[in-house]
Length: 412
Image (cartoon, rainbow, N blue to C red; front, side):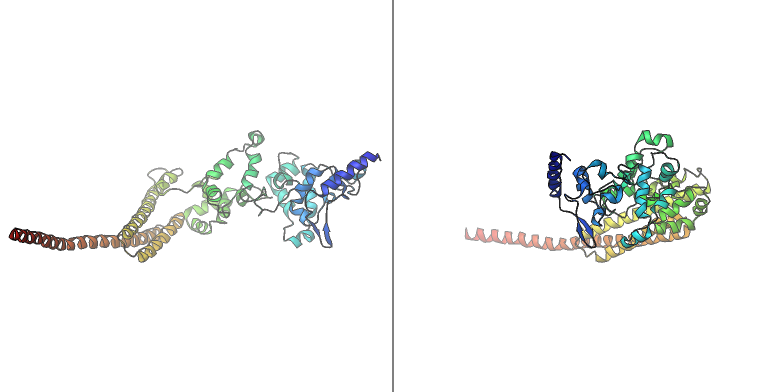
């Protein structure tokens, strides 16, 4: 070998070994990608990124995925077969699965070993593996190639705050989605939805993302009959009420798209109380018994919200009067709990329970309003009682002034 080549490699390897502290761990001690590891002499740009990933922490090295001879410093010998330099998407899936489909390897890390089986059942896996279409994503499209981070790491592309944007890389691409008839506004719509606002603006990590509804490796759109069950993973009580009502059977039979009949898919929104009847009229004609019921339901929901609002104003008035509002606030919480229960029960369309909860909200709210009215009456009574006191005080001042004036004239 050319001596200058050897010197160049030695200097380069020494410099690379000092770039960052090694993070590779094995049971028998620390291992490093140092000057004796030939891969870094050419692929220095991957060293730092790989060290930052989770695989390096468990002792994996370049040749565990790519093969070759890591002790060699020449390309030909370093790439000695078996060697996988730049695998395509299908090769990457099989490579990752060689470990992640092995229960004996995954058990120690508490990871499932069925991702490849799930991926094969997904739309992505069907495109990539069954039909050989590269529009289907491989492992590294979502997890990166070298800096592979766990989902709970905020830097990870599959972290709850990042996963939707990761999906949008493809699903916002009009050219890619065009042949499949898939719209490209899902990410924008999701961010503006109740779920998106909860996640991105309120920091609620329990809010669902793409993978919570569609699955991660087994990504599929939910058929209409499955939608209530998908939503019911989070909205357990709503699902229970829904299936107790007349819409539940229709959803199971696929006649209506479950929750999506009233709430849009990616733009999932809260239906305002004043819009309930208009929403029902998207399926039920005006003047039908269903439409009449929707009108009564809307009146009930609107009235409950108004009762709560008036009760809240009454508490504010009590505070301005300097009254103890401990009891009023406890009553308000009871009324609010009944109103929230009402928003759940409305999915069952059980008129008796709906009317009962509405009466409870109104009764409790009215009690708070009466407390404020009594406080106001007491304030007026107090003001009226002070009139004689002020009159007497003014009279004393007046007669004192007259008396003082008389005394002055006497001495003059």
